[in-house]
Length: 97
Image (tube, rainbow, N blue to C red):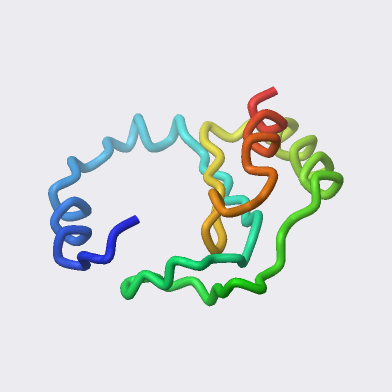
């Protein structure tokens, strides 16, 4: 997202706190879809490289069914770099149904 750790910290620290009422309404599902990443951002915590694992569309469909049953408020794609997955648009489409 950014190679400027100070700017990242500023945005994170300046974010308004979420009230308990709002926080209870949202559940976050973090879905890793790849370990692949070619960016090498200096502040990144992910153990990613250009040969990383990628989720298959069949596996994603199976997981999407469970996610839909659980009905989280938010789904975050993680990795590596999710936008480098060759099927990113299809993944977003499947999860949006």
